Each structure stands twice: as structure tokens, then as C-alpha cells.
Length: 287
Image (cartoon, rainbow, N blue to C red):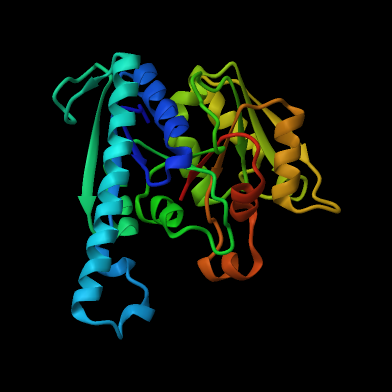
């Protein structure tokens, strides 16, 4: 997939600047458009249940205060966005107005944040999110981006700016539909990489459509890839996958996200949950 539209849902001021810089840099490298999405929740949803017994005037005061705080935050984030666009010389223009040039726009929408992230994400080639601070359960916004959009989700470590493309790419391969979709979605990035490694566990090598088979498929696409097998003895698949990625000095990891049923992931965790919590390199998830 060629990356021409990028979505950055944003809310936290603490991670805003690094995420904006990462997204703007990516828009520049790909001559792409960036939609920065700030969702203002309905103030009614922000009022705690403990206020239900208050008078209407008191509740109205609290609602107005919550709305004012949200408006102030969006104004501050928008100004930071405009300053960065000016610094990077990126035009602040709506999507589709200047094709072939990096552009960006700050969108303010009202509604349920998770719902809007999933819907806006469906028309983005890439969604960028920060690494969650909480993974059990995972943030609903992260789940919405991954499960409801059908698009690749790039998870970036908090405070880290990705201003150069990945050159040593690792693919976490488990023969699943989600892993195959991840490879297909990132095929152009794989073609531009200096090194591509297909990472898989020993037991997966004895199954059909193993890591060697994926390397053969990639060779048909003009991509030279190398199989790298890891052992899960004494550690989880997620731990082994990250360890092998570090050993190979990879700068991006591409995986299928949530390749097991939702309830099993909730109860048992899984590779996706481990990567969300422990990854020390950017991870691209596709579900």
C-alpha cells in the first residue's frame, strides 16, 4: 500500500508534540496528507455519576467547566500543530486539495472518540498511535483504531520522534490471515527496506505456509528476505519475538494484530498485548 493519507488521533498533551512531529515527517516523506483528529466528547459523558443528585444549575456549571477545559486543550494542541506545520513548511490544507504535496489539517469533531477513530481510520492508509500506558484492558481508542478501521496502525514509543524511514524491517509471521494482511499492507515499505527478516517460532516452521514460504513469496515481489527462527522455550512468543528483533537490530516490527479470538486475548493476553506493553521499537499492527 502506498501511504498517501495518515490519521493521527490526538488527546494527550504529554505525547502531542512528538506524535505530531512523527506524523508530519511521515507526510513529508510520502508526499501524503495528514489528518490530525481531536475529538471533543459530549460533556454529558464527562460528568461523573456522583453529580446526578446535584441541582440543574450546579450540573450546568460543571458541564460548562468541562466544555471550557476541552476547548482550551484543543486550542493549545491546534496552535502547536500550526507552529510545527510552519516549521516543517507543510501546507495546512484540507485533504485532496493539493495532491502530490505534503499537507495537513487539524480536525475537531464531537462525539464518541472510539467510534470516530474507527470510522475516520477507514479512509487512512496509516493510523499513528502512542504506545499505551495501560494494556489490560487495552485503551478503547487503540482497539478502535486496530479492530474497527481495517487499516495499519503504527504504534510509536511515547516521546520518540520517528523522522527517518525504517530500513531494517522484521515481520512477525505466524501464518495467520492477519499476518498476511500486514505483509500485503506494508509491501511498498518492504520493497524500500535495506533488510527484511521473517521472524517465526520453531514450531511454526513445521506447519504449512511457514517463514521460508513467505520469503519465497516476497522474492516474487522483488524483495529479498531472510528467515530468522526463535525459540519460545522458557518465554512467551511475544518475548521471543522482541528479543529476536533486538538481536537483528530491526527498527520496525510488522505483525498481524489480534489473530486470536477477542475473548481468548482478553483472558490469556497474547502477542499483541505483550507488544503493546513491552515493545521498545515501533510496531505496525494490522487486523
